Length: 490
Image (cartoon, rainbow, N blue to C red):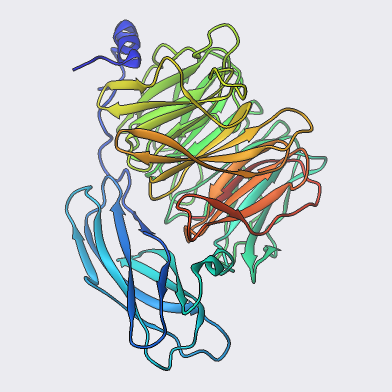
């Protein structure tokens, strides 16, 4: 088997990794006990005793086992409509491994079904876990109308770094950006935000004034008054691991620390924090990621490159030798992400690609301890100059990059189709001048974008019904903001 560049770096660093507790071993216990639901796209059918289908894919987390019960219901319909009916080829799927399973959703009309656009919400339930995906059904009309049917989103939180800065919650309600009552909290000198995974209800905000602060999320999305968690005023990027048991803090002080947390987000005094040195102090808010199986943490460190750490059974390993930027003289790693199936590590770099828009998206396959870079000699163009944030969507089928194009110039979001063998460039949609953050909402219907320079400062995009992977702008906001990050509630 061919040894990847990163594996060679790891071997070179082997003496330093000796105490890291089986560096590439997946963590034991509850590393990812949930699942995701996705669909294959809109259904177009005629009125009058006809039917159409969409494939519902259920993808388990690395530690999920059990049965997922599927139900469906029409949740959006024309006024006073007689709606189509829906059912499944299999309404119950049982999992004993990480292999995804599918069920066929069938929408059926009769002669009395009203023409128009409908949303069918598919819900998967396993014990206390519930996930949804929305399928658009066009009855007797073009599915192009599906681009505007998603009218309600899950909750999300935007971090602003202005004076005063704030963390504030929103949702898309009736097709408009709507503030969540009681969700705005002042933050001075905001730098980063992270939200707990499914099953938890809290988030963390880092700031230069107060260090890391814990906020509890109420059932209506309101935020409690912040409670001091840690005094690290240099915290530059945060993440919560998939088990919800560790807060990861990449600090401009030059350390990566895994803080043990309780089920309510407070510091767990019964366990010990795990610190390790970083190879640089340059870290962007989108510069940290942890793989969904909880085994790999990566931090983008500017011109130093990207540094990876093993994280096994709550033990944070010593960092490997950083992956140098492709352009070793001018390149800079500014964003990282891992896909939902832990297949790929993505790195966004400035001056990484040979095209005029020189931002690059580097892709490494993850296979045990061997990370092999695809197209190492010339990474895929990110679609812009500065790939500030990378968002793999829940299905794993697409990854989106938020690109800056220089001060005063409109930025964009470029989509890439993902297969088992790598990525290919899809479509591009316009964004604000400096898009800095992306998030996918809990219904898997919206992608949100925030930026700090140039209108729109926020946009909510839906997935196009006819061009797979394309994003359609739906709810732009031109109100000036200094947003630096966004997270979606699970």
